[in-house]
Length: 92
Image (cartoon, rainbow, N blue to C red; front, side, top):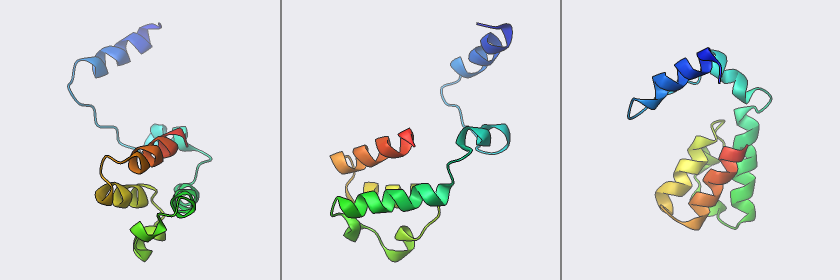
């Protein structure tokens, strides 16, 4: 572990919560994965599972993949569907 890595690890290991702002350098982690494309894929996955009726038109057309994910979660809280979609989105 480098000195810089150790310093960063110490910064985030002591607080109970860490809030990451997804702008600036952290955005590079998501380069090549446009949110609108991921959102569309997520909606198609929901449709293929026969659960498209859970989404409103506004949720279906959102460019933010968190919108359809949250909508499913609100209606199927704790379900395998909700958990599987969250895992899928995390992998993307």
